[in-house]
Image (cartoon, rainbow, N blue to C red; front, side):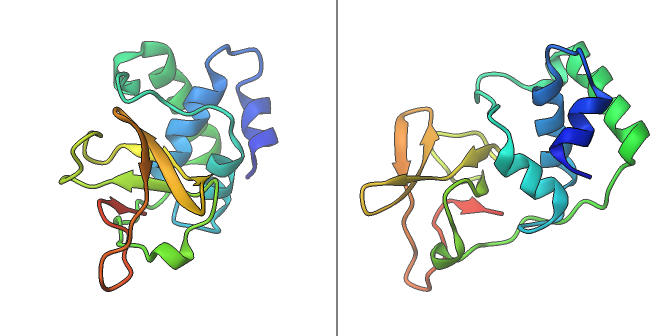
Length: 139
């Protein structure tokens, strides 16, 4: 399954990319999986001020994607080493993050000599703990 197939399934729907994002975010099995690759390819990225469950169109389209591609196996979030993160990777904010809701997805981008994500306060550079794990985020 890939982005083209998913867009073809939702052809003509103005919120197709948003529904595809939430489907892939919900069901991807980690970096390198087909759904994770779709997440990296999408131009759409949600605002932390909006929840997809509040939009009946997105819920309907999510259901169409599940009907066509099936529900996948949900994988638990895991800590991730900073050295393993690349631009366009998707991370998930942890519960102790101050400027993003718990479990909120963010896309990584280059920032100066390192990597960062957007948060409610602007740009949030990624930092590693003493054991090399990214602080405040999981994958």
